[in-house]
Amino acid sequence: MRVMMPRSGTETQPPQAKIDNKAKKSAIKSINKSVEVPKTNEVLNTKLEVIKAIKDGWDGFRKSPREFVVFTLLIGALSLGFQAIGSLLVNENNPINIGTIIIIVCSSLGSAIVNLWGLTGMIRGSWMVLNGQRPNFADFIRWDGRAYLRLFIRQLVFGFLLFLLIITGGLLAGGLAIINQIVMFIPVIIIAIFVVILSINQIFLPWIALLEELGPIATIQRGWQVVNPSWLMVALLALFQLLILTVGTLLCFVGLLGAAPLAACISTAAYRQLFKEEADQSVTLSNAN
View (cartoon, rainbow, N blue to C red):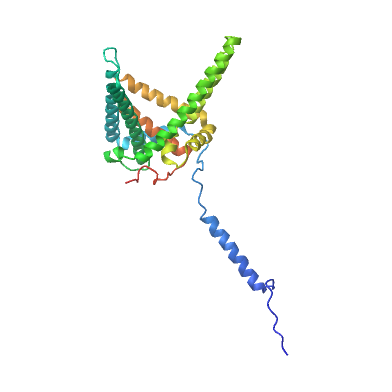
């Protein structure tokens, strides 16, 4: 009588089956490795090439100078208009009442919205020209409320952080002044140096806020992480941009119509160097409807 024995789960496979399984596993590993997607927050470069950023920014600005200048003029006119409303109401001859306060608050809010709108449009336009596109005026003025809110919250958090640093320095200085008036300047100097370092580290905060889906604290950490290795080069670039804006201001403010968008294009070129070549276009900018 022939007895049928159940097969064991640990039954040894034939040699040819082992070879086929090994080949299959090797192929799967190779495919997974070939399609591996880099992390969104991967740092592209650790050092900023200042001359290249300036050249790329200038070449980008030259692709669409008229649109940049007209948009800058529009933003400047609207911002000055809101500021003028508040300035006219705040004077000795005009008593402060509920209506005046409401108008001042509305003018301040309007000026803030215009600035957010202008900064987002400038970054959008500069990103497009550096991608080889020529933006039209509609690309600059396109409304994106979620992007403005995201940018505003991150700027607010950063401003609050600076405020805490300044208050801390003031309290330490006040406490040390009781002991010695010379010693009181030590915390002030330390806090001032740290504020300068942090400000340079966060020079790309608007770009990170608009182009990367990070929270407020993560946005600040991202700027610190990426800019820190190239801090001196970024500071040098900031000084160059300050020089451009100063020259534009000295030219009866007319030069700012070209200097401001040129500085934005240079900053965008520097951002692309330090952070990454491609941004998630679904977030805000050039491909948004």
